[in-house]
Length: 372
Image (tube, rainbow, N blue to C red):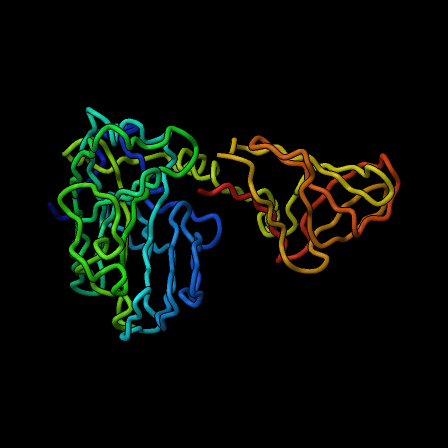
């Protein structure tokens, strides 16, 4: 079912939407990244939080992914935009490009999937493109490798699609894992080779996945450099009826996103738009600097630390002196509540001296990643 845009200002359905950042409002990593598609095998989040891209094969297609202020009135000012910059009209067998969100099992137990009493679910979203295309919306059960796909069409105007997926009762042996691991994937197929399109689209019921049946009948976003694709207002909820898109306070959305990715410090986010505070630190001995950091939001699991990739981008001030250094390492004090970072290669001080660390250069950024 599809319909034109609606205003979601009345009667918000609080807590019904299992998608995080469906309004595309949070983009901690970047608001625009060019030249995507060059990696033969790539799985990451280039821009908007929680929305991954999967790129397989060695095709010629390239695109820019951005957070764009072109959303439908009354829904969200922001949307995810895909802009084809290099066409790929000779599609190799194993090529694939889809955008998806992974959901923790403990957040989707209300679906009751794979057991008696399983529920139907509805995915609704707002979409437009540079023309008329057919793309695929897939639900994939990562616990049991089962899936189902429905096709949808685009026009040059914003249209809300409301797509109902049947319950998966199965034989009672395939519930979604009730844990912090990835259990359910909601994905938009924009390009695929015959590995994924040569069969019959699996639309009627959940089945054990067969790659050839996952994206049959879709068009390719890479068919022309004139192609654009826009997406926002994505909502996943229990039942066969789509409610109005849930409007969520930006601080709530950011907190949800920070469970998976946090910027602990970034040059340019300081009080004067320059140096940014990292934290208080001390010399453990005359060469070893240690700095405990408490996360503002408890993360999904122990995260992976990234601390820039340039020379002399952080500075430790102490005892009327300072040390400039390149990066941090992670000590054994690592939890999903906080982390202890250190540097033992660029320091020359006195054990016990305390001070503070700040960014020094535009390349300085300290992040922690616990994505699914």
